[in-house]
Image (cartoon, rainbow, N blue to C red; front, side):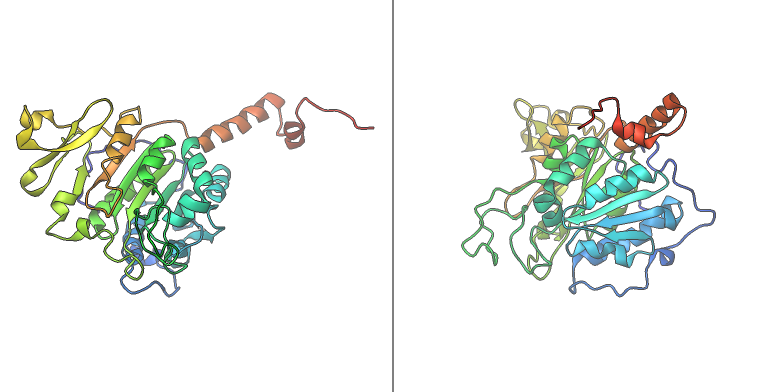
Length: 359
């Protein structure tokens, strides 16, 4: 059990309808018999270990967990978990998982994807899953590079990035995955780091308990093609000034000796300031509210993320609000249709009232 307190009370019903396990479970039951094959030192190992250790805490049957992945290094996840899973089509994991979540309310459905898989070829599927608020959980492993295809720049690579496909440096403006998710009005958006197991586990639990789409960006190191991309967040000498911790109900304060904080700056903007320079000191700091209905506040928080060579970013839960889930509403429509017709007539539903005869 994680000891990290994100200050966020659980929203009800994330696992509603999923059968509970009749006996206590442990990590070994979720470990498959497949050899784990990633590059030595890959951040995926740490995330997998945390995930395997976290799943028994949900208290549900492992056969009621479904993992759907696209294409990429992270997409090997379903092979390494003793649950149901599917290694699907490049970028299409959210669409496949949507169908699964709608048809099988007894499953806890998870999508495992990467920055290339989700934000390039899969960008369209991702944003529509988020806006629909399907009851599934999306883990986006962001290493800011194409790892599986050996080191091309990705949609999250910083400007000027020199790679095999950008030998003179990338001129692209990168995506901020959290900003993208909030722009699609996702109801749960968080960011964590592969090497911080306690924080990662706490975020995963909050995501699992959320009813609707939970989007979690995980900063994940690729030691072969983009090593030390997140060193600022892991190095003991820099991490206090790099990590802006988000704890619901607490002032956003960070830095060595707590000298830095987040304040409001003009219209709908936030900024980092030295607390000693503020007119009212700590009283001027923003109190983090993950339950703010308007996503504009969480979006402003996401813009504190450095778009270049990362040296500072908010870490934690940006937004968690309670909206109706798409799959719940679809199933309710089907039940209502059955009741109004007396029986479930699929052909009548497909045909509808607008018909004509072609001679």
